[in-house]
Image: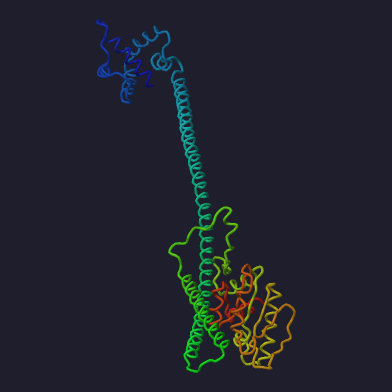
Length: 411
């Protein structure tokens, strides 16, 4: 109806411009000043004028008949042929349907554009996430490499520290032994001086020459000991800065650095001393298990006689070896002279007795450094002296009560 109102107003302006024409309907006159799309109120006014003024409608109809291609709706409203109202209603219905279809199509296009925008944003986000994941993977890989380098550096530092401690201990013992030898030579030196100063004449020239030669030899030996002691003492002082190691062909000629055993690392999340942690140690490939025999038996069967205690612990260790495959050694105190305890040793468990006058603790501490450093060593004892003694050789430690708890859980 809006285009019809526009057309009627245009015709009204044309008719109003005729000098001799009849006046236009009064409600229509104020609307002639406005241009553009008429408002709903204007459309209603135009419809009321056409319905209430047949003369004006006939004038507009004559103008429409002269037009080549008038608006079909305007012709129906103005000319009003038979059945015009039904045809107008049909046209309005079709127009509303077309408008609804156009609006739906526009909404579909708008929705499609929004969907494409969302899909594009999601694709960009996926690409960004993929890039971030790749960066994170690279960072994690570099972190793993750095952790590996740090572990290797810590292991190397532990080996160097162990070597330094071993060397310092060896040199300290050597200095002590040389000091003792020096003191003994000083005593001999003093005795020789006293003998030489005795007033008893020696009538035999050969004896006097021999005594003089022996005295000079002792003096030379004492001087040599002094020099050796001073050299060893100077080596005990660590250098201010460690010189760089040999590289290239020189590295092949350098003396092989002494290796040191590194304790087995318990898996992350496993508590040291727990049943799971001990199970990991005992099942480590190539593990050597050293057991403080009586320390273990006194934790489990203190009321039994020594022979019965030994039988019990050997049976327990036999079961341990069959479960884990580890090499198992048990050490008992050997007792006094003439007393050698006997144990029915099952296959796979090696039983040892300390020599007369030597404690089993000393045997355990002394045997650890003789085992190749590439083999893990697990020492079972609750004795503090044993634990402190073998710890510096890189052994893993298990208390007697902890091993008993593992055997109960393993059944």
